[in-house]
Image (cartoon, rainbow, N blue to C red; front, side, top):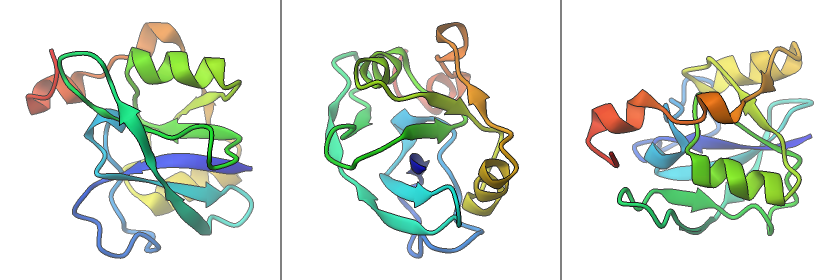
Length: 130
């Protein structure tokens, strides 16, 4: 399965297991597509636009990367809407690093994120968005 994940912008070597994940897709500096079978990073997932809200958060391009799902600690409502339109599940992860996320994927521990839990306090606490 090809999964889009949010990486922090300070990540220089995104292939390392210690690479930090953004706490919210809207706080990501870039997005990566990983293979859930082996955890390998397949490609960068380009930014496909920005949220129309006051935060102007980056949104991954869900159409051009042949994705099967997106996974992260939290997402905003706009990305949740876009993923539903694209037929992609949004998987909730507790991972703080790429290695932790790879282990969660391998153990099949990720569950769908619901609309009730899509908005993150992380984005508000960081000063981006409201």
